[in-house]
Length: 308
Image 1 (cartoon, one colour):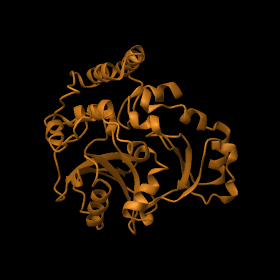
Image 2 (cartoon, rainbow, N blue to C red):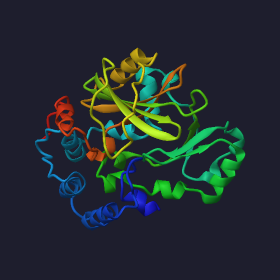
Image 3 (cartoon, helix red, strand yellow):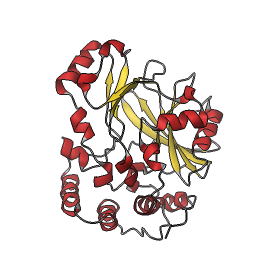
C-alpha cells in the first residue's frame, strides 16, 4: 500500500486498480532514476499523451512542470508544509483562519490522548490525500493498532513527482481540530490565485455520499471546464456563498506575492479556515475538459524570470 501511494498522486477519481494505471506505475518506476527534467517529461507524456515544453511553457499544466524544474523560491518549503504554513497564514490574514493544531510529531506513541479533544483529523504535513477522521475513543484505538505514521512519513513527493518544495519539509504527523458544517465535513473551495488576483474557484462537494466538483469565476459565473479524471460535475448550480467576499479577500492576500498559488478554504458557516496552500496542483498532470482551458488558464500565469 505504501509503495502504491508513493508511485501515484492520489486523486479521488482515479481507478488505481485498472490495468492501464498499473502499467503506468510500472513505467514510472522504470524511469525513476532519470534526472528531473526527463523524468517529468516522460511522466507527463504517459499521463496526458503529449510531450510538454517545460522550458517555454504555455499551458497551465506545462507551467506547473516549469515551476518544479526551475523555480527554487526559498519560501516554497514553508508554504507546502501543512504545519509550518499556519504561521504564514496567521501573519498574512489572522490566526482566526488557522485550523487549531493539537499535536505534531513523528511517533504516535508520543501522543497524550487525554489532551486531544475529539473529533480530530490526523494527517502528514507533507503529503496530500492521506489522513484519517477520529470521532471516538474507539477510532483512536483502531488507529493505534494499525499505526500508519511510518508509512505516511516515507512518502516523498520530491521523488515521485519531482516537486522540489517538499524536499525542504521536515516531515511530521499532525493532529488538528476537525471542522464541520451542518453535521458534516465542510465543502472545499480551491481558489486559483495569479499574482494576487483570484481567477476561479473549484468547489469540491459531497451529496448523498457522492463527490462532485464545480468551477466558478471570480464573478460567480459557472465555468464549463472540469477534470474528467476527478469528481463528475455538480448537476445543479451552487449558490454564491455568504462569505464569498471574504474568500476573495483571504485568497488574494495569501497569493499577493506569488506568481501562482492555490488557496484551499473550508467554509464552516461562521468562519473560513485555510486548509493548505498548493503550489503544484495534481502535480501538473490534471486533465482539462474542454482541453483549451489548459491554455486559457495558463495564459493567466506570468512566470518569474529565470535566474541564471
